[in-house]
Length: 292
Image: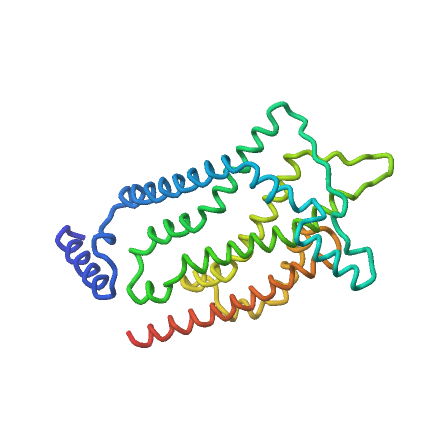
């Protein structure tokens, strides 16, 4: 193929992209230019995370006493709600974390390194809207005008779902996990001495995992947009998905039926929302294909 032919083809592509709303300059960018653009988005995201991490490091008392260590105490909101529910139901089975879990640090620099690690995690969570926004800014120029309109609010809904997922994990799964795992013993001769890093690792991993799981509708949207996922596929394998969600609930919660059901219900709800979103995306794409 001659250079003149290639040039004509590129001009034709640019004309079609311009007609559909895509920026011609973005379409003409080389691979290295795309990498350079991505690098600056990553730099801005890291800067935002660093700023919030420094703020979290300074607010040590609030981050640890009020947020991280609170689920292990009887005064925590979830523990109080379960206590009232247990009183109403006339059972002691739901009275969780009534004795504060004692924590130890076994390394000389353990508490300081934990302080740094928690600050980074807090910075990541607080800066997540900025990170989502930077990611959206990177992919937005590659979209057509109708796709931009259809995906408007993506940053907002992604941030909201991620935040709700973290709160769900923090207020429901974490207290149940702390109570079960902190009081479980294989023998009365063995005393539980919970390491601070182990406790905080469980709290953060459970909360972040819940945040990612709650992004299921967002994943459904983008996978359906690129043609990987269809509503028919999600309906066909709905029962299989329910089994996977039940297993996932068993992994991120204590091994009791009540906790698994409490976690599995919102996962099923999110899966059904994902089917609705996938159906709308597919219908929209088919309509656009018919108009061409």
